[in-house]
Image (cartoon, rainbow, N blue to C red):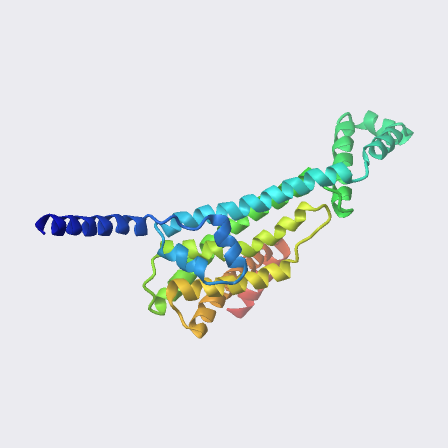
Length: 277
C-alpha cells in the first residue's frame, strides 16, 4: 500500500511538474500565422502577443517581417517589370547621338568644356524621369519606394505607439510599453496588401490599406489596454491629430522664419514695428 501510494504520489507530482513546463513552453504562433489572423480582423493575435514573452521584441520582429515581405514584392515586381517592359535604350542612344552631332552642341562645348558632361548627366536624368512618368520600372523609383516603406513604417509604428500608450495610461491602462509596441506591430499587417505589386503595373489601394489599418489599430488598442470602444477610438485618433498639429506649427513657423529672412519683407516688418511704437 505504501509503495503504491508513493508511486501514485510520484506520478502525480511528475505530471504536475511536467505539465506546467509544457504549458509554459507552448510554442507561440508563428509570425505569418499571426499576420494572417490579423488580416481577418480577429482579436486572438493581439492577445497572443500581449501575453507572450518579450512582446516588444516580438513586435520588432513582426514589423521587420512585414517590411521585408513588402520590400521583396517590390524587388520582384521591379525585376519582372524590367523583363517585360519595352526597351527604350536604343531610342535613348539614338537621340543622344543625334543631339551631340548638332552644330549647336559643338558650339556649346567650345564655349564651356564642362558642357558635355553636364549635358550627358541632364540627358540621363531626363530619361529616368520620363520612365517614371510613363510607369516603367526604374531602379531609382524602386529604391525610393523601398526606403520610404522601411523608414516611414518604423517611424510611424514607434511614434504612434508612444503617443497611444501615453494616452491609454491617462485612461488608467496598466499595460507595459513593450506590450503596446508588440500588439501595434500586428496592426500594420494591412501593409501586406502591397505584395500585389509583385505583378508589374499592379498598385495596392492606399485608401483601403489606411482604413484597414485604422480597424486593426482599434482592435489592438482595445486588446492590449482593455479600453472601451469610445476610449479606444479616442486613443486611436488622437495621435493623428497631435502629429498634424505639430506639423502645422512647424510649417507655419518655418514659413514665417523664411519670410522674415526676405530683405523686402524684413524691411517692411521693421517699418511696421517703428510706426507702431
